[in-house]
Image (cartoon, rainbow, N blue to C red):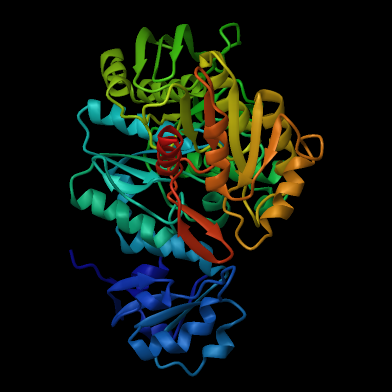
Length: 512
């Protein structure tokens, strides 16, 4: 589909925008981009300052490539007074980018039922459960998140949890063009803080939990909490102002829900059966049965006129998935879907790659691969594995380089406290020395490696070590990467798949 907009149409939705020259308003743009490599004839180029590059450095290059106009930051316009194309001056080009994308792609989320999921842990699984429920309701569905993006389950890998605004709105427009009616999206705190999702009109917003992560970016837990709060405050008001029947599904077991509950219709979930309801709405589990590869319980729902017992049956394990599935039930209740549809959507939801994923290569011990890469995530996955383990619990885990260093000793302490044997290793060390990262981790494990703590910076060797130590009835939890199929060392990315490596090391061990 060919799209085009005039500069007048673009600036109409940009507070504080100044078009230079003023008489260029009828000039057309046929695409929008912030990446200079994607500029073609007719592109509106948005010069966004980034972590590594400043888009303003490429303005003259894109004009030479055929850009029809450029958007620059206020205070920088004098640098481009001699350009041969129109210039739009705005207070903040990053914030403007989202508004421009929404305008250029004709506000696609107004035509979609949009569910956003935010939280430190559980976003991916909850979003995919939501998509499955929507599919069971008869919707043509789409997903955007950590695994990538796609329509009706055909997911293409992406490079971040929540794409940049232009890519996001382009995908939503594609969804509209292809007849999609419901979308589930993971909304990362970075995306909210940077305005990538500004202009998205949400019908349902879900909060899973708030625990330590991304402090290298946000600085404090309060700033991290408040960034996620944008989904439940500012976006709630925008959604309602645009005719959406916005509902927030909040985890009442997490203290942050109090901060998020001020401006929205609420649906509260809790795994604590005695927990008080919030705003007369509540969803809680009863009769929980857990296995390595399954979960069953009944979701007791008492939300105004919606009262039901919904049988939840999942084809994958993990105690934490009780909470995630309750949030998905909350989505279905918020939409007014029948208990039968909600139950069917959860029953047919496929296992999520790298989330409490069993690995079987003929061994007599269990191996689970999980994306747990935060203190709370590691705590949850080890506590989920423990009651399913007849023998010893062996953990393999690491902490990312160039990321929040304060969580390293915390994760070390959790691994040592909850495992019988803890193997500390590398997990995307990036430009840091892997051994220095392990020093930080072991600081929380009582110092030097000992009988219960092993140190091996080579991740393959660490997995091989865990396999060699495992006996019948033991469980190995390989945490940190989950679905990822790479290891970042320095500035290079190397193939590495925990599931595949575990299988290979089990087969090697069996052949001895």
